[in-house]
Image 1 (cartoon, rainbow, N blue to C red):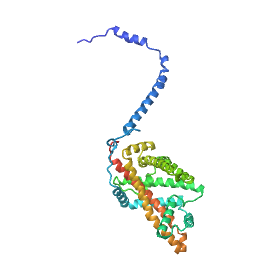
Image 2 (image 1 turned 135 degrees about the vertical axis):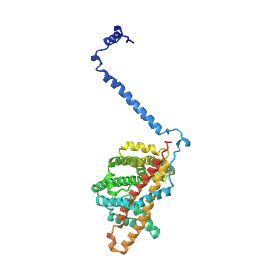
Image 3 (image 1 turned 60 degrees about the vertical axis):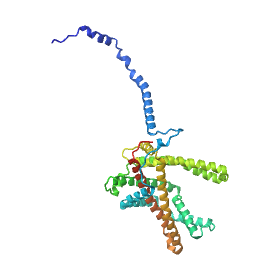
Image 4 (image 1 turned 120 degrees about the vertical axis):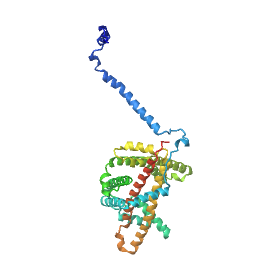
Length: 378
């Protein structure tokens, strides 16, 4: 079979099209014009797609009622006491490891930040005795006095009053606290994989995400500004006598309650972000978005767990520190050499060290329970 030859006239349309093509010199400015027109459109589509993705992940809408069947999201967890026992059992099984972390925290704090001032403690104690007017007589009065001293120590009133050293000590305290938080989370993550890490491995390996963790901590401070504003407003209202009126006091406490709820609403997801940001390659904003998706539909239950954690820490401080304060007062009254013994500052240091390790463990194990229940956003 012979091949059919094409006639020469078949190439004429292509030649005619090539003859009508524009010169190359006139098309040099075309890419710049095209980029100037297409780039905003592409950016707009990216923002639109991101917003659509956000709406898909967060199905709730402002000023629209969401029915219960649309926002219920599963969260399979043990009860409050049972989960607290789980945390305690995890720490007790690895008590040497976590006690070593708490001991390092205490040593670093004592060497870089210093202990609470024994002189400041004695001055506050004497000021309470001189201004109480006999209100702290009897056994319950002494317990109330010890409670006031504990509150003063927990809020940092036993520290140094020098402004130059106080700022430096606060920076050291923040750095040490973040390091202990990261070390505890790293050790728990390795323990849950079935391995047996060493404490030095945690110290050497856990500090990589300290900058993202510090940035997320700054976000928590910003989210607590409504509470700080409420405290400032309370001090101003109490000094001006605004709280003496019924209607004024009701409106004031309503605003204070709303500001407190706003801070708690924000901080609930950011506490989860403190754990998520420790993952390799995780950025702070990405951790905050992931935490927001994780707690949606579960925020109230997670918030109640966090409040339970804080309540357990306060209860432990009260049960341990108040007897120590009472014993310290009795010891100084019967033994002159006991005046130089900083028993209360040492107790506060140990309690703060153990509390940081315990709270980091509680939050991390709570995060693991939430992640294991991979329900879709409600």
